[in-house]
Picture: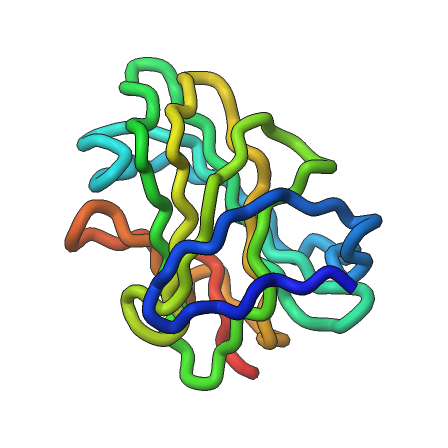
Length: 175
């Protein structure tokens, strides 16, 4: 079984190399939620950058637990993603454990994130960093976190946009 390096509670970044379902069979599962929203990503991406953000929740056929997937594509009439961009997500659920994080090399998209950090904004928070530009019309690979959660709501998570705004996204509701 492939194991992710220990998640650092102090937010140290962990380099990502990509993974396939063949390497980690627990990634096989049923898609429970798949939605795309158009939103503006602020902060590291540059103010006002518009992206199509795909949000997917998969229940592992192997473990019965949930994986939360993300993928974005900068859209026309928008500046491409800036270097050192980060997608910040907050779950903030007591007892939530993120058990694995990486990107899929056997799926859609071409641009992978470079690294992952956990616990930066408190328990249940994490971010993926892209140290390169993502051009308009080009999508990222699916990047994801595996968790110990068994239930979710389409609006239980929060995506941080800039410093103060948030967008409701799928997140765990019970462990």
